[in-house]
Length: 183
Image 1 (spheres, rainbow, N blue to C red):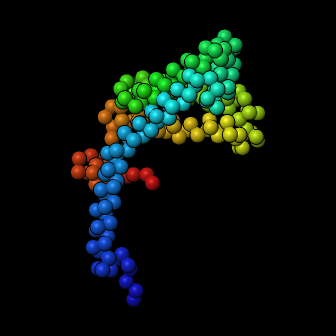
Image 2: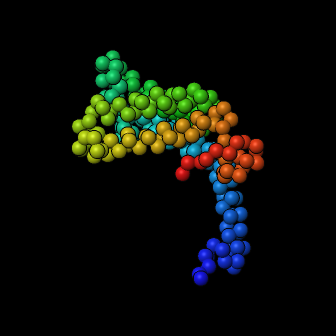
């Protein structure tokens, strides 16, 4: 009868070494991941915000200003909305980079993301080649924000002390009730 490779004693040492390495990597990822996510998201917002301060540098400025003008029924034109949007995004970026005032920063981010999704509804001819499944480059630029929202949600889960636990054993060692982990 054929013995399973996993049960073969020649592989036991390799499995232990791999498991030790895997635990070290996932522990490091759990410790560093939120910070890297927060800094990366902050850099993106600061970068895109600063671009909007310089007319013509942001590929999103035309669609953004037309969206704001339409939503405000013409009350806020591009000459006002673009600097406000630039400051708003830059402030989000600075908040994320500094790690200060994260609740307020994440609130500003949530409101900004709602506004950023609005062109999908207001300008479907510009955001889709075939509505609703074939986005244009502008539509793809907007839809990718789902990832930014997910990143903000993970960061938000840590505002009150939440952490990422690298493996189930760590929860059990901390005396937490063991619950099934999805996935």
